[in-house]
Image 1 (spheres, one colour):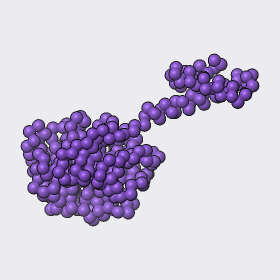
Image 2: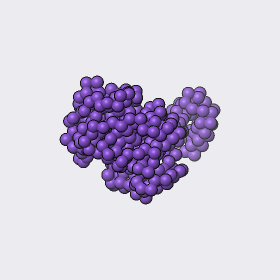
Image 3: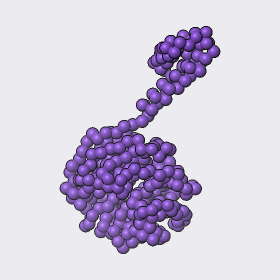
Image 4: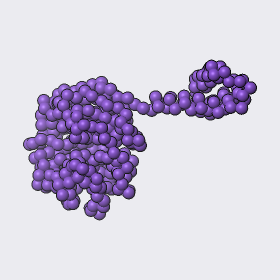
Length: 334
């Protein structure tokens, strides 16, 4: 059928070839083009039609649309946060009525990369390490002078980082449970902290409206990111370590490269997808939103929670979203 077959074979499947051929013939017939011209421009038409079909097929295959498929309603009060285990088979959702027992409100909890331990932090000013299998406390890390808002294992499992209303970030040795270093620099409550994927850097955010990057080995601040008009609640490295969100910042240059603006309330959490193509965010406006990182466009709006959403998290394979809320529920979206 002219030269369509040879051209399409470079780009798509037999099904695409057949569809392209039928549409091209029908289009030519309808517009009444003189058939003698076909030999001169059928390659252009074939390539154009093939591109359109392959573009549509690529979009339909690669864009994931989520919908709610499961709700967990075990929390009697606020579900402050939740997280997938590294293998994606278990959900961790700390609360004062569960196994992770602090004397006051639990603000964050996270699995170690090997899934064997959990680190948690609390308004009781402590950071605690727990054994997953037994549910027993292994170590209690004390040193912060006020509420501890966030804590995390390093990817290599050797160190814990924590942050507090005392305006400090602290590094702890997992094996001994001893404090290794106190990092000072923020001028307000430090609300979020995270290791880079290679364990060499720490990023933090604060009521002082800044995001700061710290060198773990040198134990000092190496960069301050300014630009937020209000305090920053959470911050995260991308899985490849090249970017930081709340807004998107380039780690090497320290420049802001993307802003996402559609939530009508305070943004309470956000996370990169494993492939670094998407960000999921949540807000006081009770919604969850997905964004394309390159364009900054919103790609999907998820509604279901009856009160503000406290956190959102991708599963390790990126196929599922986990959300927690002050409505007392944990929800899965797939």
